[in-house]
Image (cartoon, rainbow, N blue to C red):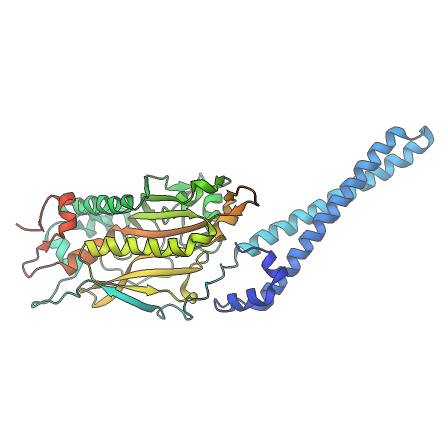
Length: 420
C-alpha cells in the first residue's frame, strides 16, 4: 500500500501520479481526511487512557468521603475510553481497507495508456518463417500424444489438460533449464508452499482487489497462489533484514492457480490460458536505491532464458493503465506464436517498490540510521505452458516434429521432439 504521508505532505504530486492510473483526486482527499481522523482518534484515546489511569491512581489516595464520587468519575472515564476505542477500531478497519485499494504510484518513465498501448522497446531472435502451413500447439502436441485436453476436461473441467510423454518431459527440461540460468545469476532455488494464509495474499497486494481471480479452499481458508511471488515475498514478512544481507534473490518453482475471471470465451483453445499451470519465478529483496537496476537485471535474465531457447520475442513497456495494483512499472516479454499469428505475453517482471513491503512489514536495518522499507521485485523466469507453446510453434517442421534448442538438449536428452 502507499505511504499515507504522501497524502498529507504532497497530495498534489500523488494525485497527479495516480490520475495516470485513473484514480480520482476526490477519493484521495477523502482518504487524507480519513487518515487525519484516525490520527486524531489515536491522540484522543491516548489522552483518555492517561486520564483514566490518573483517576484510578488518585482513588487510592482519596479520603473515604471523596472516594465514591471519584470511583464514579473513573468509571465514566473508562466508559468514554471504551467508546473511543470502538470508534478507533472502526476507523482503523476502514482506513486499512480503503488504503489497500489504492494502487502503487507509477514510475515517471512508465508509458501512459491502457491494455494494448504497451511500448515495444526491442525484439530479439529471428522471427520464424515457414514454407508450409504452420500448426498451432494443440495440433502439434495432440499428434504426438503429448497432451490430452479431452481427459483434462473430463476430470477437472474446461481450461485443464494432461501433459503426457514428451510433453511432460519437455516441462521438466524447461523448468530445470530456467532454474539453472537463474542460479547462475545468484538466485537461490526454492520450492514454496502454494497454499497460503490471507495475510500473505494481502501482503503482496492480491487482496482485496484481485479476490475474484483467486481460488480459496472451502473449509480451511487457505488461498491457492496464482504465482509463487506470493510465498516468496511472504517468506520475510514481519522481518528486519540487515542491509549487508541485500540483495536477497530467490527463484521459486510451483504450480499456480487462477480463476481467469473475466476471460470467458478468450483463449480457450489449448493451454495458453488455463486454471492450473507451472511457473519458475524470480524474486528479489533489494535496497531502495537499487530497485531500478534490479528491475533491468531481472528483465535481462528473462531475455537470456528465451534467447537461449531460440524464441523470437519482443520486450514491451507496459502502460500504467494495465499495471497490477502493486506494480510501479512492468516489462513483458511477448513471444511470436505462429498458430495465432500474434505476439502473446510469456513473461512479466515488475518493480513494486515499497508497496508490498509496507503491507508485509519487511524492513532493512540500516547501521547508524532509520530502518527502511525494502523494495521487492518479481519476474517470470518461465511460465511452462506458454513457453511450451512458443517453443513447439516456432521450432516446428513440416513433418510435425520439433527441433530442440541446443541449450535445452542436455536437459531433455534429445535433439528432436515428436519424431516417430
